[in-house]
Image 1 (cartoon, rainbow, N blue to C red):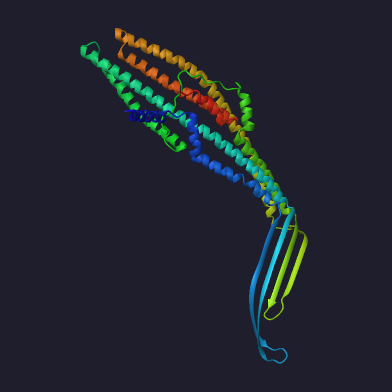
Image 2 (image 1 turned 180 degrees about the vertical axis):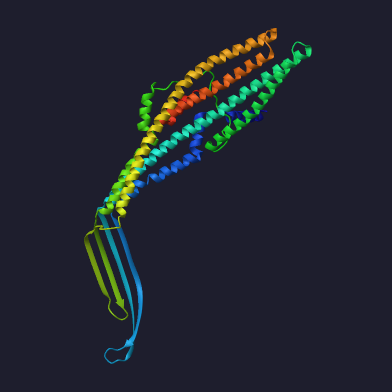
Length: 443
């Protein structure tokens, strides 16, 4: 009897663990491992980190070796130059040759600018990846709270359905005994039919929100930990919008990437002008050649050359001048893109700040409205029982209460999301910022 009991207890423990709701950090960790968009950004970062090595290669020496090992069989036929007799000459010989060459750039403006650009390109890829990390945090949090919002809507709708069902049954009973008119029954029936339709819509919405979260985490997320009742959301710090806007205009990762793109465009102008400049290389090569004929002694040749080679472009059909003009225009485009990105980051930060501050006020007002709605519902129920209120009054009070509860839960989620968006706009959103939000959840 002991072994089956132990087995049941162990199985129950595992079922309890599996049934435990996942919190925000756990879902985020799943997204880190499974989100395809984030994996793509990570691969782009790995590719971008190779750019400096590639750019530096143009400034380093190059060493090459080439050679040949040939067996030659030549045949010549023609008149002898002295006696005029036609003769045939056939020669077989073996040739072996190799050359080793070294070249070290001494002055190559194009290669130098390419190297400087490679450092900027790598920094751009790192800024882009940091932006992708922030985007993942926002996408996970938004999808997580979208599921909770849909769950809250469904829960409130089902509670309203239960209350409406009771009110419909009461209206039917009262009509049967003659204390109420058929109008009250029709009103209760209409309210019931409406809430049933809303329940179907809420179920469908919840399924869609769960599917959206599954796309990010790569599998069904299961049950999610909800917000604890009566949580307090911390206001933004600093409490004024100007520091957030200033940070957004300088530290936002999209702004950083746009600034690096402008520097790359400037370097590209200088690199284009290198088409008018000379190049100077230090060169050294060693050549060895050995030939041997059939029945004859071989001959060997060796040559070593060390020095400087140079090249000066004289005319290339105005291609360099045109390329410089093109890159000047692209630099101006990059400068305007940077300004547009700054303005967008500033606007995003301002909107998120105002959304969070107004959201906090809205949450406070809706909390008070929820208390008032509960009191109103209780009063209407009591008035309905004593005959001073009619059925429609109770139905309206129920509708108002559940609508307020839906608005309150959504206002809390939106306020939390605006706090995350505010930090993202300022370029300061990190994985650690999820911890205080996770502490608000009911584990």
